[in-house]
Length: 319
Length: 186
Image (cartoon, rainbow over all chains, first blue to last red; front, side, top):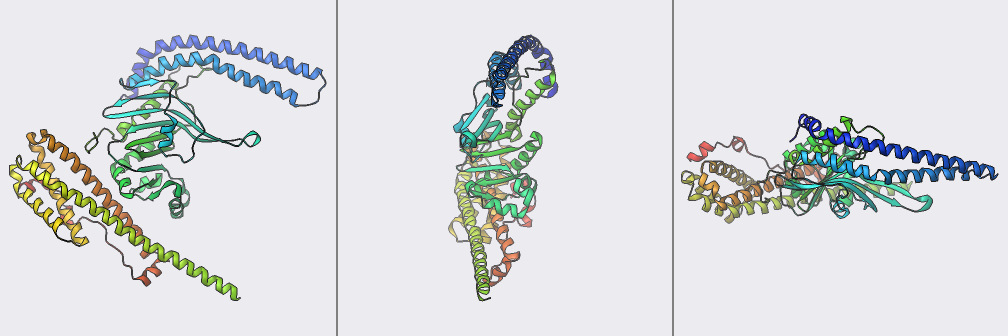
């Protein structure tokens, strides 16, 4: 496991030089964007002036150019910065991934497949808008892993009734579990118990979509998570006392909502993030250590799942 | 007035039906989990002859323990044991097995034997599954005992003459740390 100190050293020796080069490119990009922005602004002003001249009263005609300009501006921003983002990811993130573990492969434009996301059964709503990036995969010790940033949404209705619901946004991890099992066990954050205590438990047991409620013995674990499983004994076979403690520790370490599930002899971990991951900041300097450290810590958290959940202990029938 | 009284009686009856069915469901749950425990225990007893055969050639000093394990297995498989006797026997066998696996550490030849390694993995797995089944049984019993003891379900339980059940516990003897040395000398 690489420590923060190791990373600081790595940053000073390997990354700093690349970042200097990138910083120059970033400044060029910002200059380009500002010019485009100014041009758009002029265009908007001209259009509004013309609209004013035409003595038309409809306020929509004033808003329309502004909205259009904003949309066009946003699009141009994205397209123009594509190259810069790609370079940043390939040079900086790619290097950090290899620093964390040499055997890991980084694919900035791929993500965990939607079918895999749905297979985990962590979220009961099927997404109809699914995207992601920053895929990392490889073998850590005896465990094959794969993770990426994922943004899964469900959009319902159309026109005025269009409603966009975020199913999950954050880091989605898939790993080989160290025991063989046949059914499914889902472990999600326990909001009901927090709010309602015993009545909450009764409500949870009525949640038929999820399968049977599994009540476990570890009180700290029960406070943080609620478990649904297809089989009571199998759920306890997977969730040994030591694994439960590890999951509680992991959640404390991540300091955000964490969802687990165990399906098809694999473990799925979904860590909820409100911010985007592994993206460069375009309008601030690239030479700041803070955001780079954040990228490192995000990667460490994901790769560290193998050690945190003790997935490399292979003393049962699965090798 | 009359309609109000009828409604109250009907509601009371419905509540009683829910409670009654609930208690029966919990009792049956305990039974079904115990039978799963049974299945896993039998699986373990099936592995024992293989273990004894593989290990006997190497572990000359542990002959006594191995003979005992064989004996216990014969007992478990041939006779019809009560639930309590099953629990007791399970505890004994777990202790003995623990001792054997610990003692195996002293035999490098044995540790290099492929058969033994595979067996060790299989044994680890079955032990872990039995442990999971014990935990599931205790959870089912807790649920059932809660219903039998808590108000208002305890009223129905008293009517149905349901008593609280015992957990899958380790007896005080078995709680003593597995003394490998002692085991090896027997």
